[in-house]
Length: 247
Ligand code: SAH
Figure 1 (cartoon, rainbow, N blue to C red):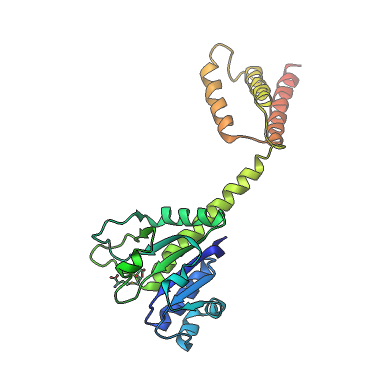
Figure 2 (cartoon, rainbow, N blue to C red; figure 1 turned 90 degrees about the vertical axis):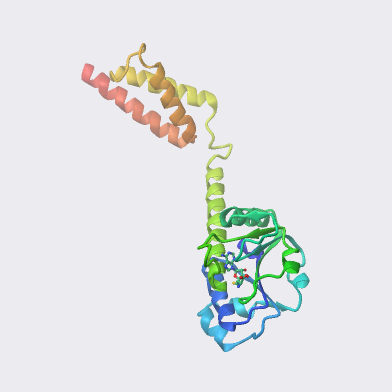
């Protein structure tokens, strides 16, 4: 999904930084590199610093204007080394990554802009952004190396994407077929209560509070049918042992 995210480098001076950005991107599963008016590109230094991520360099789009770089993008975020005096809608790196990834999942193209080594992004470039993102750093020394800024924000994007992937694996588990209905849950709770009484763990008078806590625990877990069957199997086994001892 991260393939809809464009990492746009504007006016990069050092080709080594471009290569290092490609490497940072590939580490974090980002694919689309866009270079707006790089001073030197392509270059052997960029390729050397990419150390194996030269496919990203080969596929990079090189263009002359920011307009071209962000054409078709629904969301544009600018990475800024300084907290500007001008009030601009701002996102923390984590929230920024979540927003970009969510937009991508919705099918949109999005862009994250990075400025020049010497002067960052111009005000005119910031005007193109919906939000600014700033990596919290030492207030006296807040400017990261370009590729390291890409690395930090790329990491957040990767983590946000992984979290969404895991959430959808969880959703699969609760497909209508696997969902246990309220009545199955209720008969499980009755079975649980009965077993607790049978094995002498609790008696009917004192068990209300305990039952409520256990209900909360199992309802929070949202077990599926197989899991309920396993739990009921354990309860039946416990009841069986108890009655075996009685006999
Ligand atoms: N001297 C420039 C900083 C350039 S660093 C300035 O003061 O603006 C090159 C680029 O890396 C920046 O334009 C920005 O896109 C990114 N960057 C560096 N440090 C950052 C930080 N702390 N937060 C967000 N982006 C940062």
